[in-house]
Image (cartoon, rainbow, N blue to C red; front, side, top):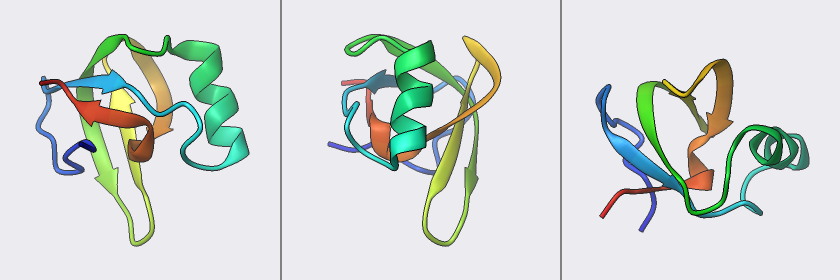
Length: 72
């Protein structure tokens, strides 16, 4: 189950796919996030080929939506 790229602010997502996305995106995620942890969506920016996710817990850092699942 992947995350909804149109998730509303306040939605909860889980960092479940640390090997998804490009190498630099994986490195950024590894620096700031813990696998299996749940985070709060601040906003998403949907683009043609990818979606940037901004989290309340990590202000001003974007992550690839492919790294997350919606919280069950």
